[in-house]
Amino acid sequence: MAQLKRLVLHCTATPEGREVSAADIRHWHTDPVSKGGRGWKQVGYTDIIHLDGKVERLVDNNEDAQVDPWEITNGAKGYNSTSRHVVYVGGVAADGKTPKDTRTPAQKQAMEAYVKDFHRRFPSIPVVGHNQLAAKACPSFDVQAWLKEIGINQ
Image (tube, rainbow, N blue to C red):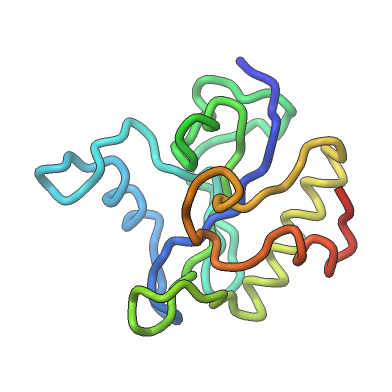
C-alpha cells in the first residue's frame, strides 16, 4: 500500500464521437498481445467518462488516500503504484491521429465534477495530465490551464 500522490487525466486516443466501452478497454489492455491486447494484468484506468458524461468504474477503489495493491492501474509507467487514473472517451480528431480536445459538454461537466470532488477530498494531491508524466499528447488538453478555469489552483 502506498500513499496516493496524484490523479492523472487521460484520453482513450480514439476519434471524436466514437464511443468506447469498458470491454474495449479491457481488451486493449489485458488481452494477450497475440489477441491484439497489451497483455497487462490490469487496465490502465480506475474510471472512464463516456461521451454522454456517464462515469463508469473499471477497477474497484475504496476512495481513500492510499493506493492498495488491488487498486493499481496501468495508466502511466513509473507512476502507477501512487496514482489514480481517469480517462475520457476521445482525444483524437476524426482523422484518427491528430490530438484534439474532443470532450463533449457532458464529459466536461462530468470531469469537472469528478475532479472537484477529488480535490475537495484530497486538496494536497495534485491533478495532472498524462502528458506531464510522459512524452505523450494525452489527454489532448492543457490540464493545468483547465484546472484554473474551473477554479482549482494547486
